[in-house]
Image 1 (spheres, rainbow, N blue to C red):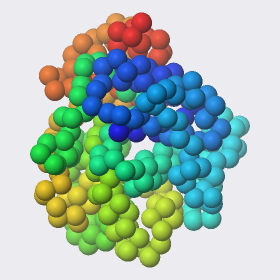
Image 2: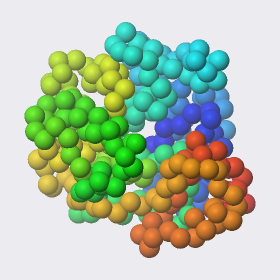
Image 3: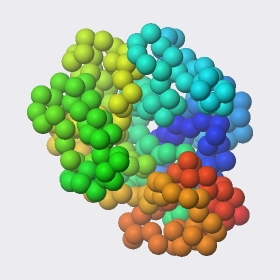
Length: 289
């Protein structure tokens, strides 16, 4: 099963993702798109025989709800709760992914960001190998993080250790963050149970109380340092999606060059939505015209 958390601002990019999945991706029965209630009518345009739009109200507790952000004159949303500081959309998208991962019957969930587009044919069975799921982990990855982002990554790692009851090391240089990854649902359920046992709170309350949140880091540190089940995961250092994380908007020529230079193992490209790259240019570069 494929899972994508999205929002109205990413709708056109999410449409491209869906078209590329329908054209190039096999090995799945369902694609779930997780959005806030206000965005459900918009995203229903993307629904189909194998694609469902999931209202976050079916995943999140009643006490966590979105409101217009007064600091942006209502252009963006914040999620308020009695558990901690206001959360941004990217925080809540992580909560949705964990919630669906813990709830599904399928053994494996493929998480794909909504600003990703598949450029090559890909069978999701690649992630499953003799009963084990290929688990993205990159030793020493944080040594390559830009200095202005390193503190944030350290905070994510530190918070993961706190939530999971890992006394040492407090942080790790191993990277677990990617835009196209696989999770085991049984591991997610055990991970949230561990968070509840460690914090004495529901996992949702524990995570909603912090803005130092990286669901990939929590899952990664749980697998590496808590789970102790080598029969469940097989390490892979291959990042299947080439990402353009930050910078100026790419023009048609730059996009063509970017998408033409995937590594042999890469099957997708992602253009971070905050770069404001025109989705119509991404469509053309991805061959989805």
